[in-house]
Image 1 (cartoon, one colour):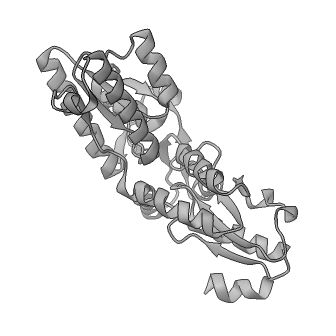
Image 2 (image 1 turned 180 degrees about the horizontal axis):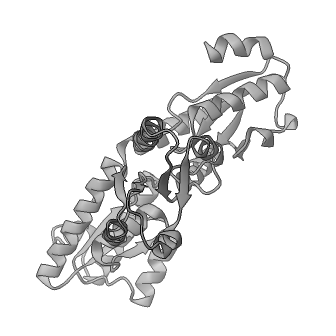
Length: 322
């Protein structure tokens, strides 16, 4: 008999919950008003549609730059955060800013800002950020360094930047990670950088560690890091994995790829309607999971749909709704 489990650790992270909660609170208190969100508050179309119906209006940087006067209007800064220049622009337009930057991201922004100041005062050094180029959080981090930090997406890009001289191996270096990246991938990238710097200095890695040329900052969100570990176990415990997230979610891609690496029968969906009956066998143990931007209600809708496809509707009412 086919069974369906929902991963208890999946669903919105604390930062997204906080941002959505503030948006809902504002729209409830000011019925009929609209709330502008700079960028999608969450990378999930189903959840965005729900919030749009309540009065949330998503705008982008181009929209913001084209505005002339926003006196009396409110602008929500989502959990990803923004660079200092965005705040200056929004305040100059007259927006009331509702800052929902995740506290973990805020702390990371401050750490990078302080590292940049240290290097400026010393007159040398470089800052590397492990993250997705163009990602909203990464743009906010770059802004703390006046856009001088080097963004590296993977080990291949690291090697390329070293070969091209974009990354210098003989200067003080501080490396940070986007908060939602893979802990294992970050560790591997830091090891490669350390080995390259040690080789350049003609030192063993052990002797290089005492030189103080490389500082690795542990900036991946602990909630995200634990999710990687738990999701690995979840993927191995099930025959089929249905991973639910928006296709634009960076965290969703990382976590779905993790599931696929451990369970070949992993399917990435954004909408419940994408689920196909032929993916399942009669005795499958199906696991439903998602990204930090995936709402719990959507995971439950996916589980319900799978049970209905396999004609186990009665079990749903008692197992998942109550």
